Length: 249
Image 1 (cartoon, rainbow, N blue to C red):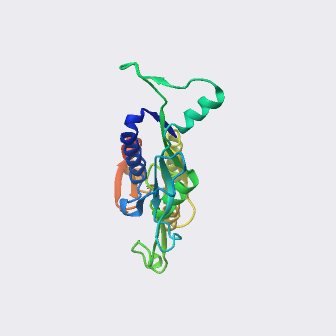
Image 2: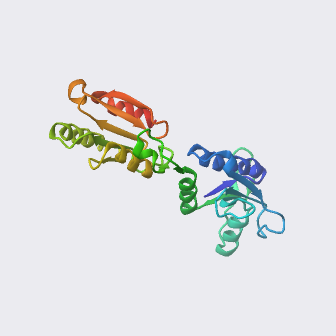
Image 3: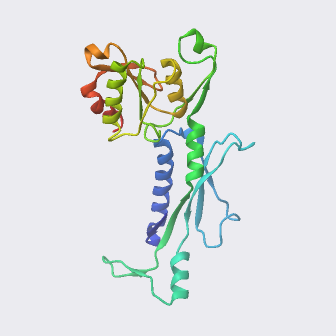
């Protein structure tokens, strides 16, 4: 991303974008302690660069220093437009409407990659719980994998789990799945024990599991389980969409 600025405002916008880019990672779940800023030394800078700072992440393979680059924020001066101007023969100066002065805009650049960002988010979210998180004897014998992705990054937003494959439950569960699928990416899973199904969803980072049980047939409500806290709320089916949309605001 290249942000064109007046030379006199370059430092202000550099600091602004450096903060914005740090905030972006933190807003999606990466703690400040897992990020580092590394200022480039004068002998590292490109010949046209006025300043460069790397935003680094604490990758597990980073070695002794503990951090590797996620992306860079750069002050490129007027190099980009002055080069275009020189070799195209076209004037690319900007006229300030307030003062009438002309100048060649400087560029503040942010340079990040999707692959590095995704890897950082996955590593930050990945957790192995020895002995399991649930209270059943079976689960406590096994370790559990939980992918605590920020809810906005989780590919599956909710899973619908009928407690039984009996028609009276699956009919209700499929109706819920079809209604939610109009606005959210959801998954339907009716195979195996409910505990196993919870764990499968935990492993892929699904924030909310919706269980349709035999009480549903009487109270028209379902149990919604939070992936991280494991707290369970009883929510009326007619209120379910609003409940989830409130979570995803």
